[in-house]
Amino acid sequence: MIPSAPVHPGDLYLAAARDERLRPLVDAWIGEMTRAVATVSDEPTARAITALVDGALIQALVTDRPLDHRLLSTTVDALLRGLHDGNDPAAGTGNDAHTRKREQWRSVD
Image 1 (spheres, one colour):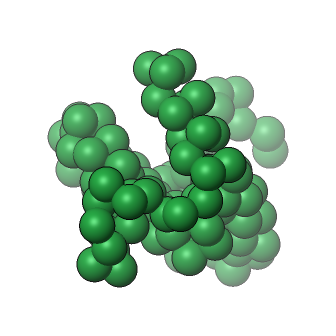
Image 2 (spheres, rainbow, N blue to C red):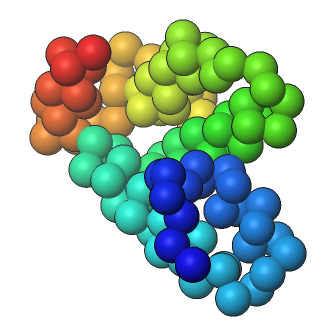
């Protein structure tokens, strides 16, 4: 059965927790999201951001509380700047191509 409305990733995750046949689809979603984020960061940071965003989406879904876009944006920005490694936030990741790509993403908002 094909859903008539777009499927929320959180719905898919929760369904996959009960039905292992859906797990390859979840794995593909995680992989694609991580690859997209990796265009503006290194791979470990992309995985961390993917986990953060997925967790935030699931929390919003199961609690009926709105997603805190400002908090999520601030936290993702901190991860992109390398705070998770204790680096100087002004230093960025050290990859000029990633820095330029992040600036392009920010300008879209």
